[in-house]
Amino acid sequence: MTQTQLQTTDSEAAVSFAGAAKVFGEVRAVDGIDLGIRRGETVALLGRNGAGKSTAISLMLGLNDPDAGQVRLFGRTPGHAVSAGRVGAMLQDGRPIPRVTVREVVTFVAATYPRPLPVAEALELAGLTELADRRADRLSGGQVQRVRFAVALAGNPELIILDEPTAALDVEARHAFWRSMRGYAERGNTVLFSTHYLEEADDNADRIVVVDRGRIVADGTSEELKRSAGGNLVSFDLAGGSTEGLTLLPGVVSVEVRGDRARLRTDDSDATVVALAALGAIRGLEVAPVSLDDAFLALTSTSPELETVR
Image 1: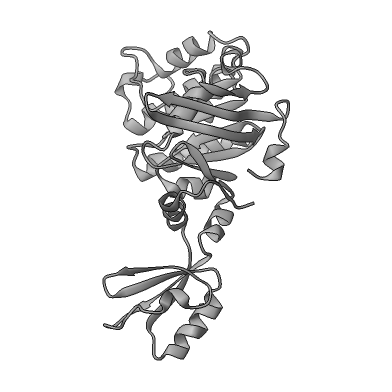
Image 2: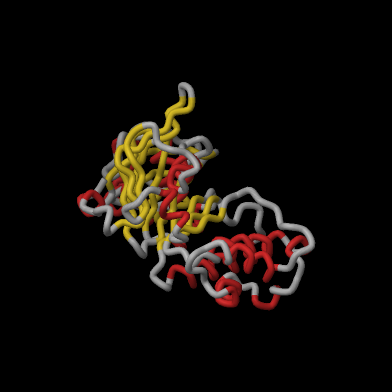
């Protein structure tokens, strides 16, 4: 963890994990996580399938209790924060209720909270105003996701937790959803979301937390994670040549060969290119920034104890 995160107190934090662990049989789904998320942050939680993301989310929502350590939302237990309407959640599962309108669904849910968001406001934030009187079970997949988002907003939460919110949506629906989410975040609210679409984390998160084997292996901004994986990719055609010695070139972090093309991750692309030029003619030379995909693969394939990138 970074010094800033360690100093995040319960009173300052929307989310606080302190040595939180959850075990299922012989599997440590969450293995001693320490994490602080400040109010107003938008944080992406990334990890491979089975990395521990969903278990961590279940601990935040009070659906499971930690076997060790603790989890606090706004300084209180998750159950207290959820019942007080301070937390909204949009999970992967759930089907529209048949024969009721969008407005009726949101109105019903809002009535269960002590200080709900006005229904018209929740519908507007979710981009559903024009669909308010349509039956929820007759909407498209993207529209149903927006209904789930409006339901999550109904209690007027200060924190919203989104578990794979755009899974199975087409590109247009995904863009519409994130526009709605940014409108909610711009009000000073806290957002935590998990996703397998890394470009969504790149575009929408202030900070990215990477989980692997139940532990946090990286925590920082998108640019910081990219730099930690080697800031640039230098690629060129091997043209039948050998890859011997490429790992010894200045700045090179790793070497990958795809077909007849070498890809060098490097933290000093200028020095790498100069050294390559000294080896002779290089064909098809390209230099590009490392993508978040590259950084994610590097972090989760090596699984260090903790990669601090801030």
